[in-house]
Length: 150
Image 1: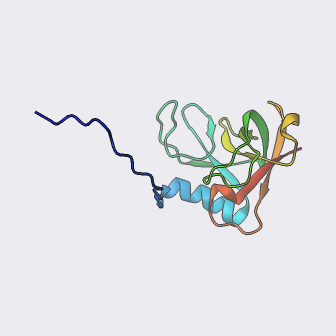
Image 2: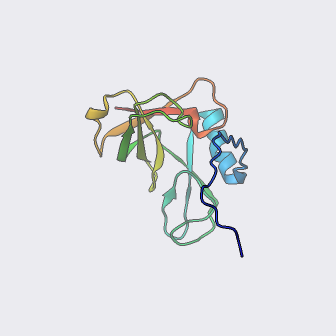
């Protein structure tokens, strides 16, 4: 019979888990387009004709294999958003940070990214925004520094 533990010990600490993630051929082409050309690419589904952005290799709606690249615009519409007022080590900038789901012109799906350049109280669903690219890009979705209101 197992011994009953009256008091469980607690060990405090910080666990750091650095990692690298292989994004595959589709993800690589998407990120290289951002880095080298300041262009945003999606994939068109030949079955349901939707343009998926960020690009992916399989349509999540009909499971068709995708291979037609489509350049989408750098301007889009805010579908929804949320402002974060507290800091966390994983956040790319200091708060307040507004994250939004942005449907770019020519795409049928949205991308989650930061919205900056306006008071969070002035943001609204349906607002038009434009991508602002970093000067020095590395092949990351954060090569889009943020989206600014138009």
